[in-house]
Length: 224
Length: 122
Image: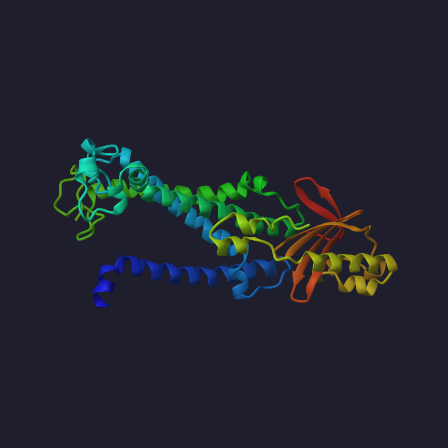
C-alpha cells in the first residue's frame, strides 16, 4: 500500500486536488448563481440542481477543453519546435518524428515494449500518435460539451432578459462562446510559453520540470 | 416543441451533456400560459394576477389586465425561463418556488434589444 502510494503519488495527489477544487467550484458557483437569480427576480436553486445545471457544466467544460488543447498542442508542437536551453524541448538534432532507433521501433523494439509498438503496420502508426490523438479527442469532446451546455446557459440568460433564444450554430458563432474559449486559451498559451522560456534561466532543485541547478543555460534536453 | 432533446445523444461526457439539456417542463409552461390567457380573456383578473411573477405584478393594475392571448404555437424552455409564442402574442415565463409564473405578456420584438411588454418585462 505504502509503495503504491509512493509510485502513484503524482496522479493521486492531483486527482484529489481535482475533486476537492471541483467540489469547491460547485459550492461557489451555486452561491454565485443564487446571488444572480435573486438580483433578477428568480429563486435560488439547490446544490444538486445546480450541479446538474448547464451553468455548472459550461463553467467546467470551458476549462477542461482549454487544458486539453494546451496539452495537445504542446505534445505536437514539441515534435517540431524547440526552445534552446529548455528542459521541455529536444535539442536541434532531434527535431521531427525521430528515427526508429531513437523511438525503439522496428528492429529496435525491446522485449517489454508495448504490444502495439512491436506489432508494426497501422497498429504501431496509431500507437505512435496515441497520446496526442486521445488528448485531441478529449479537447474536441470538452469543447463540444462547452458549446451545448453554453448554449443552454446562454439561452436561459436570453429568456430571463426577454430576448430570443438562439440555435446551436448561432451560439457557436456568438461572442459568448468565443469569449469563453479565447479567455481560457490565451492563459494556457501564456503558461506554456513562459514556462518554456523561464525554465531556460531558472531552476527548481529536484524537479524533472527543471534542469539540474548547475546546468548551463544553453543546455537543452536535460531534467533534474 | 422543445428543441434540445437531441443533445442527450450527441456529445460527451454524459454528465455534462445531460446537464446542458433542458428540464422537460414544456407541458407545464403551456398549461400555465393557457390558464393565464384564459383568465385574462374571461375577465378573471384575480387569477390572472396570481399567475404573474411578483416583479410583473408590481407594474400592472390587476383589474385592467389586457393582453392579446391567442392559442399556443410554440414553447421553448431553458432552465428556469421559458418563451411561449401564441397566435397573437409572445410571453416570457419564469420558474419560481411557487411554480411557473408569467414574467412578461403582450411582448413585442425590438430586434437585438430585449422585447418590450405590456405586462412585466425586463
